Structure formats: structure tokens, C-alpha cells
Image 1 (spheres, rainbow, N blue to C red):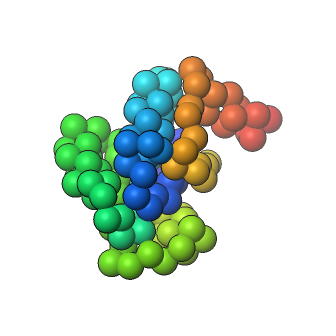
Image 2: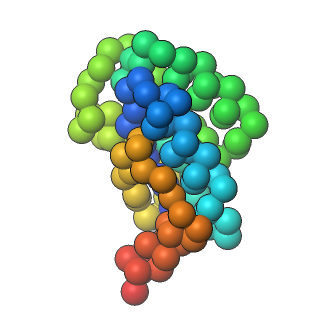
Amino acid sequence: MKEVSIIIASFNGLQETTKPCLESIFDHTAGLDYEVIVVDNASQDATQDFLKQTAVVQSRLRWFGNQSNLGYAAANNVGLDAAQGECLILLNSDTIVTDQSLARLVSFVRA
């Protein structure tokens, strides 16, 4: 079981939101046993191709591509259902994670 599951619902906006969000997670979450689950709501841009390629090199990333836009809440539910972590974190796709912020959040939740 992972320590943390980070769930992100996405829809389009690859360059503006999803890619910078994922990069910030991978760059600033050292020392935490985590997985990232992205549920894409049938983006029409290159989001799904990017997620497929990124999952090959980032083993922490799992992604699900919906056939239609299920909406934010339903996409989060898909991610929550797939999550394997003790602690579940829902992030908006436009979130930029800073150094150790998720580790501090998990520490606070456990206290």
C-alpha cells in the first residue's frame, strides 16, 4: 500500500495546467511514498498522449481516460476508486506543488 494517492481530474489545458502540475509534483515530493492518478475527461488536446508517454518513464503515474467528460466530481470518484494510498489528496490540475508541501500536508493530517 502506498502512503499517499494524489488524484487529479483533468480536461484539456495540458500546457497551461496538467503538465506543470505533474512536473511540480515529481520535482517537489521527494521522500514520500506516493502515486499520482490522473483521470482525464476526454481531453481534445494532447493530454492523453502526454499521460501515456509520461506513465512509461514515471512509474508513480497511473492514468485513466474517460470516453466522455464525466465532470469533475465523477472523475475524482474514478481516481478515488483506483487509489491505493492510506492518505488521499485531491488536487486541481492547475495546482503547483512547492518543495515538501505535500509531505507537510500528510504530516499535518496524521497529527
